[in-house]
Length: 441
Image 1 (cartoon, helix red, strand yellow):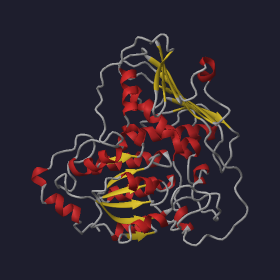
Image 2 (spheres, rainbow, N blue to C red; image 1 turned 90 degrees about the vertical axis):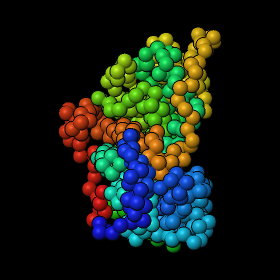
Image 3 (cartoon, helix red, strand yellow; image 1 turned 60 degrees about the vertical axis):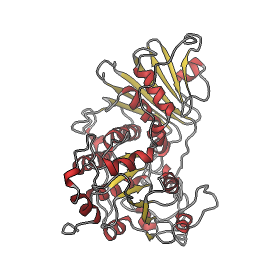
Image 4 (cartoon, one colour; image 1 turned 180 degrees about the vertical axis):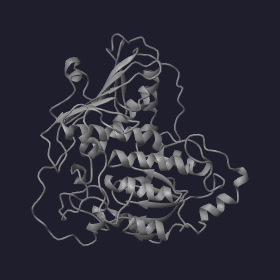
């Protein structure tokens, strides 16, 4: 492949005179084309979340390849369409089961890749695509392990590609107004932030039954780089989330959406300590309940901040019950002058009586053109994306470190520059895992 010039490279080289440096870790017009030229997109994971990403992508672009390991039309207990339904909508588009084969065979035609497969495939597929010079949109979380996240961030920077993680709520006006309120000092210096997911889901003991693999599902490719396990319907199409082999539980599934808001508003990057507790630790499945607590250092004129995550029906943060906060809130920024409550669609300064006459600052963060559209524009013009891999890699790391601390059962001191736990070196084994033979990062 290294001796071939792809369509994308030919187009880019023909327009080198007009290409400048992309100022935010990507590159200006990787194809060298005008913003009106269509991108050729490949999709890794065409059912479930992948089908939703396809609907959200601008219809102006070309979908040239679809990949999924599960070609079934539907599963009765699953409310989202599987890849078989998506395939019917794209009868003339080439279909694959193995993303590695798709990228290799379609290299000359593909400009950008959307990765919507399960978590354990996110980094391997994204990194392979980026090493081949493809822009990447990857669903949250960016990776299954901390090391994978670091590698994805590094490769994106080296290749100067347009990247975006699928925390699409980041593009909403409500998130922007919350960030402005925090950063304008509406509640004074913020010293703690608490996030809570009600419920979340979990599994249990690994099944002993080994039913036959359903027709249409390539189970070996689903397992991919993870340790091999016999097929069972408890894993697919959705509940792989609740097994350490494939997902990160409720926190891994939803945490990046919530943590993104805290990272943006408080300008967070890497914690100094992490500790977590919850349901009894299980070697195979993720917890039904989890409480994680992080300490972050001062950032500029922002003081050190304590940040907590909770999920599960029985363990809301103490601040929710102590102050009888409204049930719609899932986030609370606690400042010296008051609190700011947050959800996807709402915000409120608390206590209401104190802020009855408060005048919100004029908006300073421009509206987004749309989360997916941001990425499409970046692929074509080099414009920045708000959830590029450099930013979202740190968000992902924080979520993964919470799960890691829970599994270790000890408060961890974190040295992010060297990727070490000075007080618990044995925990470093969980920063990565060995891939199954035939799979690489």
